[in-house]
Picture 1: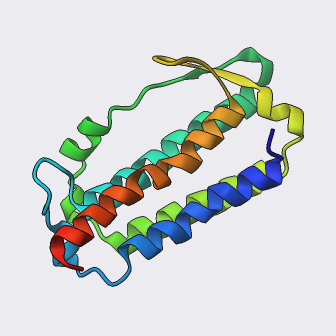
Picture 2 (picture 1 turned 180 degrees about the horizontal axis):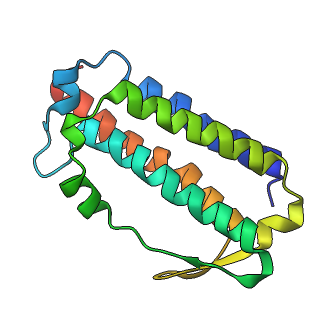
Amino acid sequence: MPTPNELADQYLAGVAQLRAAVAGMTREQMLARPVAGKWSTLEVVCHIADFDPVLVDRMKRILAYGADTPLLLIADENLFVKELKYHDRDAAEELALIEATRKQMARVIRALAPEQLQLTGNHSKKGLQTLEKVIQTATNHIAHHLPFIAEKRKALGV
């Protein structure tokens, strides 16, 4: 089982990885959809910026409610991308939000006692989840999307 410090380090590493993945892209390249049926790079970045706080809320609920096993609500990424005007948003602002969110939560994670990682929340679709699992889900979220950004860069010749 990883320590809180190890989890925090892994969680924070995603910010640099995401910044590197989009480095040097113009706004036009960020808005392009070079792969049919896939989101643009800006939509991917905005999706991460919108879902990091959702995942942080789940972590904080688990910690705040402790043994009371709070409800963790589902969020539909397709509704977010459809309704939140991702192409009107600024990539630099979204990246700054991701970084600030992760820095704040990493500080909380580092302060955890190892046994707190086993506190649970009840996800409205997935059932019981430990705090450790939610942290790992959040950590893996950026890594999950990096190949999609690389695919777009390659299709654009960037």
